[in-house]
Image 1 (cartoon, helix red, strand yellow):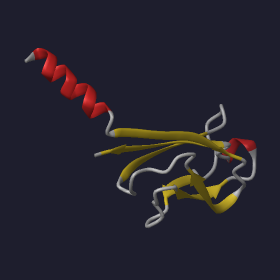
Image 2: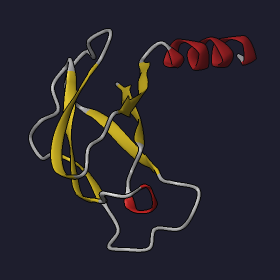
Image 3: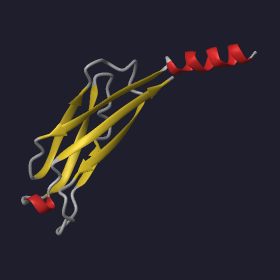
Length: 104
């Protein structure tokens, strides 16, 4: 029974797919940026996490915002919205790390 339980757990890992990357070259102000996967997901029912990479000093002005743009998830990627990105190094998101996880 223990061997079968282990086999079931290993088989379950085959149903998890992960895509990840870094979006660079984010300009100031408001923008939308597409994220494209190297390999398609089975469908668009996956989770997305976004992490803004900020300057080493604290942001001194209004904080930028990042969002997954509603309705943009597709098997080949999604779109990110960046709002209120600053114009100086102390107020600007320099890059954005993202991860998409699919599980049946």
